Amino acid sequence: MRRKRWVEAYSRSLETVAQASRSLKFIVGFNVNIDAVKHVCREDVERLMRHVSPSEVAKRIFNLPMKVDSLEDFLAGFFICVRDGVGGEWIITSSDVSRKLEKLLGWDEMRMGGQGGNMTNILARLGHRVIPNVPSLPSQQADLFYDENVVIPVPTDRGVTFKHPREATRPGDPLLIHWISEFKRGLSVSLGDLSFEAPRDNRFIATFDEVNARLQIAPGFWEGSILEAKEAVAAAVSGYHLLREKYLNGETCWDVAGRTTHLIREWRSVNPELTIHAEMGFTSSSEVRKAVLSLVFPHVDSVGVNETELHMFHSPTHTKPLSSYSAPELYLKARGLIEKYRLKRVFVHTREYSISIIKQSYGVHPEEEFMALLFGALLAATLADTGTPPTISKAREAMKLGRFEVSEDGIREHEKLASLLDSEGEANYKFFLEHGFVEGDPGVVFVPSMIAREIKATVGLGDTICSGALAGEQLLKSSGKG
Image (cartoon, rainbow, N blue to C red; front, side):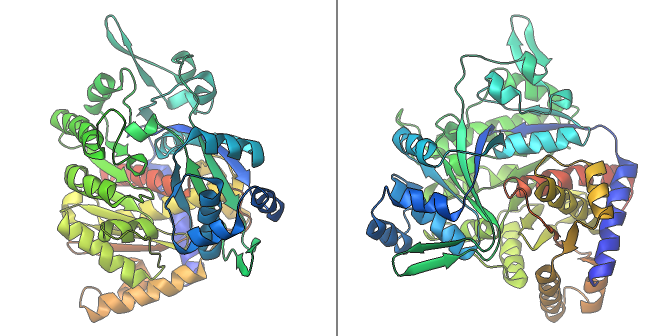
């Protein structure tokens, strides 16, 4: 398919999902926080540079620390993301660094943060009832939820009751703030003889959050989510990238991940048909990756990753991240994951395109998955365009106004993947190009991204396509539409 046919396919997916739309129930865990978003310009970088040793920043660029112990570490991570046009997330190890960033960099706005928080709001705005795990719920956090369709389990003397976020606040809970440094394509930064220019819009995230780092279960969520699992169609779990190898109380990432999988097994025991999706994040520790692969992957149906995360989980002992937009390379690594860990679905989302590999046991036909991915990608483009949580009506309006364009890079990668599948006898080249999917066990689905012509947000795009596709799958597979 060329550009015009892709636009038609996107429009068709929106109307197909809209026609099948009705209220479903979802469980979402485990990380929710507040994102302090800064739109970084050259002057911001220069201001930070006055408080660091440039030579130390340069050393860290060539020997990445993968965590933030100092402002030098922060700048090294930011420069690498600018240079490569990729997103990254590093853990801040001390409150002192977080305070320095607040003083020297600050923020332009506060938004809902955390994969769990973002997915909750996306699903709620689509009209679905969502039960999230909210480990810290002061009023500032509660105000960021789309209150109407979100319910929080609250423990009482008579068991668990469910309340809307503003009615369930816990005033003594701490604010959990993550620093989001967004940059625009063309941002030019210098470091001595080194200079970098961003090839695309993206962001660098620095996180100081001891609560979500433990994937803390909120009061009432354990019991409440098990009660709701009986009627839920799907659960999305996330936050594993925040795990520490070791904690001060002697626990390890294996202990914390193990607790969450115990809860996942409880959900499954009361609802064997529940679809469980795990959305990954940038995980710099090989020990954490091994724990997630060993404890989480065997208990979920589906895993979502971007291109960097796919490389890291495919080769969990590698200490340096690799990035590639090559669709054939990403497909082969995703297929390796689905085979090795007996997953039913692996979903790879990049800025330019998405690939889904699905087993027949997942229960979604490749054509339904194709429609669901188009729907999720269109919601992500709408978020990028508006900077606010998307809805079907917002997406429809933006399409009508021509605010998007189909990624040409994505179309080229589609052709490359079609050549690979044809050479391996897995798909007819022409059919895969014309339809965007191929049946089989596993089936393969490819969608080039819709790109917003003017970008107002880069954070939460992966969470948006993930939750949009998950909702689309559940609506289409039960309605028989595709």
